Length: 133
Image 1 (cartoon, rainbow, N blue to C red):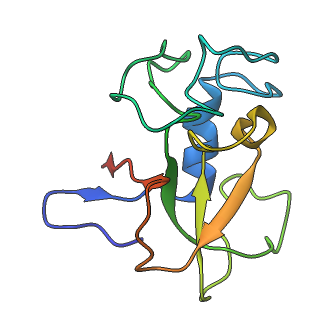
Image 2 (cartoon, helix red, strand yellow):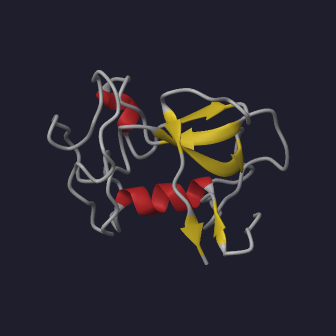
């Protein structure tokens, strides 16, 4: 994983899923198993200010909805589902994005939902969240 000089980088897909679940396993969404308009920005007319919705168990805001977030991993199948911190393929044509967006249905905001975009893609539904060592 590529760290910049200040120690910031994109999260791996496994890191993203862990922090999105807020310390819980098996939840459909960062806050629980049901969704309402008070939980996240989805099926809406555009983005909202970050932090507009309640935080999850780790204190992470907006882990679902608003914009999908880039991950470091290339999009593809995992070689093993038993890995503790799995990574995707070594190379590819698209990176993983997670979290769902303001323009999609609630099912696309599930913690396990994943999608992809080619690097260099610019649009109104993709953003990023950095992690730091």
